Image 1 (tube, one colour):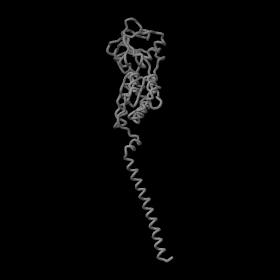
Image 2 (tube, one colour):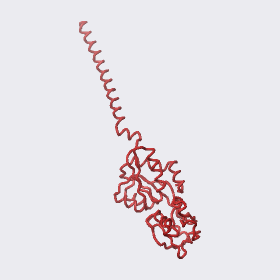
Image 3 (cartoon, one colour):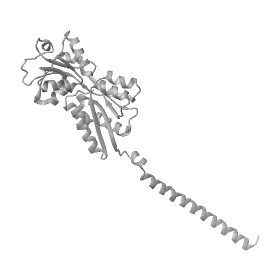
Image 4 (cartoon, one colour):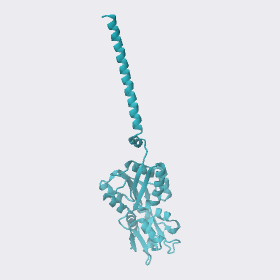
Length: 275
């Protein structure tokens, strides 16, 4: 082999190595560009934990004041989100969900009404109990009728309102009456606990059996009377993300706030019991 041929072969080898190095460098550069592009993509924003959009929460009427506070805290912690609430009787809310109403979260005032949703396959995962609630009698300010017990509500001439038996509050009242072996015929059954309380606030009724949280929320508009039978009718409140939640990630984050120390502090201050 001549000297000139050997030189040519070495030149080609060096050139090939350089080309390979250039290709490797180009690939790295391309990979870096791709990574950079991905970091600006919506998928990355989601992966980084940034939340946005509307969160629709269906919640028992008794949660109104507490959840509205937590909704504001959530929006402040996650700019670009908006929490919209639908409060009412848990049975009516459950019926709306199973009927196809779009929502992200359901917080019920009893496992029984939550079961309506889980049995229909409309819950994502297993609902978790986040608080409990206990009954209390709400009377007119100053308690002019001197109501001191559940039995006192059976007095002739006393106008008493109760929650409808289909809603958790009404079912709990019936448990308490059964525990005390009492029978009570109200002047009306109301669709949810707020409606029952409002009858007393408006002085259309002398008393109502509602939750302690509702008595506390009403302030000096009513007076609360505790009764021992309420211990036999404490309601667990379960919460869940819904299967077809339009904003499932934000729904999970809202539930995490409800279950957090901050959320529990707000709920406990309203009179809810720890789960």
